[in-house]
Length: 429
Image 1 (cartoon, rainbow, N blue to C red):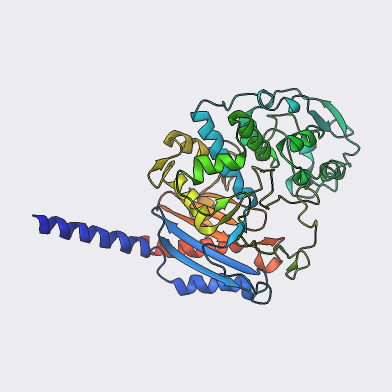
Image 2: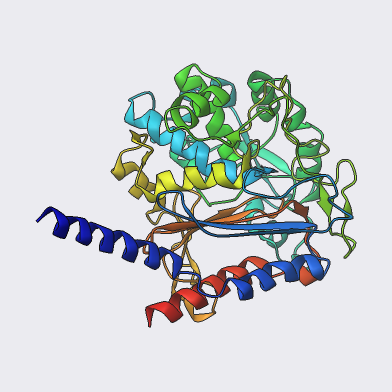
């Protein structure tokens, strides 16, 4: 009987291993595709890593241009600036604080940050909401009258914590295309603030782009959410990450400040159609300054400021994949994770919907050959990308450091992810 049980266990283990490995049956084709984006001059470096729910590598490949990146080894332990991939970490901390009764999603933001209680709302010179101006959404607004100079009015609604999560609070980046609004934000040099209190003071001097709750608009909302987390808990966001996420779940490779031996990659720009080192101030999402990463840094930006390795961030993603648990520690209740990937905004978008800053793909992703329906996806300002596949229990990461990818690199994530799923679907036939 014992021998029979042993054989059954061995057979189960063998089948599980084969199922995992069969996700990628043609690694050479995927390797060639990854290499293509360095060979065609659209990326200085590229790392693709897939992990199963237990943390075992399903696939990994890294390539680099040795002239552009001579001194860095690119692997699962290489440090990347992950920018907006910080947002889902900050949101998960918010959900943990809600579970602990330290805040509620329906609380007014002013309960924690009274300095933001009197924010004004900017309107165009003909009294239109600035979110109605096309360029703020990434398309041409040349036919619209210049909204500047803007006029400021009192807010007609109370900003809530939930609106910060859903990007409905009215904060923005200095990339709206509305010159007078962008210039005002640029002038504050938000990322150069010494600490959270100075950042809050600067934010209190800027208008909102719309009344809270009126429309979802991507921007500094999650940065303010991180400030709420700090005020509600009495801890810095850095310590919240350490004490609630990385420490208890034994995650290495996800943090704010650099360690003494941490070496970050250069910042590359492709705005001139060729890759070069980015000029100072070229990453203009918040003006001339970018988040600080030095050991002395005391400003922790919940929407932009983290650094991570592919292995470390994959561990965080596996916590979500495992519905709130990793390495024997439960961080979030399963109900909280379900809330993160549940439909919340952009419900009429044919390509998917937004959970809590987590994009969930529609069936068009599969129809277009870019992956599958129901993937949880996100990314960062310098070209990083991730997805979670809850159907097949694995996570994927595409990591680079590139501001304004040259044209030859457009569609990179869709093509690489598409090849992964081409092989997956073939095995599932």
